[in-house]
Image 1: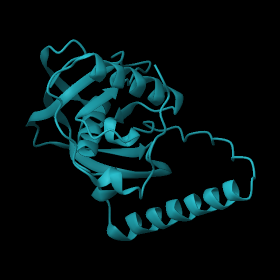
Image 2 (image 1 turned 90 degrees about the vertical axis):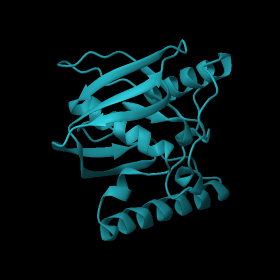
Image 3 (image 1 turned 120 degrees about the vertical axis):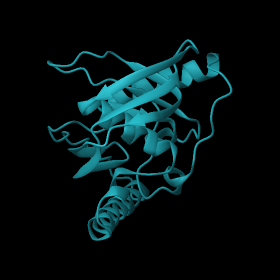
Image 4 (image 1 turned 90 degrees about the horizontal axis):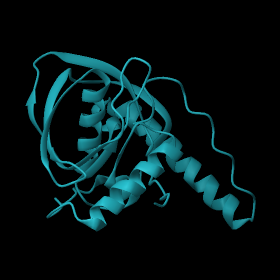
Length: 192
């Protein structure tokens, strides 16, 4: 397993659509393992392959909390096959949009069909945080970030801040200054 670099907005690769995987082979399982290790290191509760520059329809999730025990979930070619009419609002964050959070409205319940780590076809009924997380990660596979679900004014403000931070980091690196330490993540649903 290897920790990979997480792309941050406005990196154009995050806006590209991912391709389905033909099968869950050793290469895809290695990608899943690397993604899980990267997600835990960040720390986050979900990660999509495009976030590490791999344009493949692969996501990993682990929303273990005191009240919910899922363990790691590996999904290749996930697709939502059913969504409830009822909506739920969660404050979402994203490892590719660091230190920014916003309320996003999504269907409260979804059923997702996917291939698991062993290549077996599965269906999973999701609700609550798991439903939000699955939808958030599938959005990444289609080049959609959670900030695409909020007002353009707020989205543009966040993107300007991220661009400014990237330019400052690049300038600091060029001047040989040490990297700034990771900041503590906000305690909410978690960066997805």
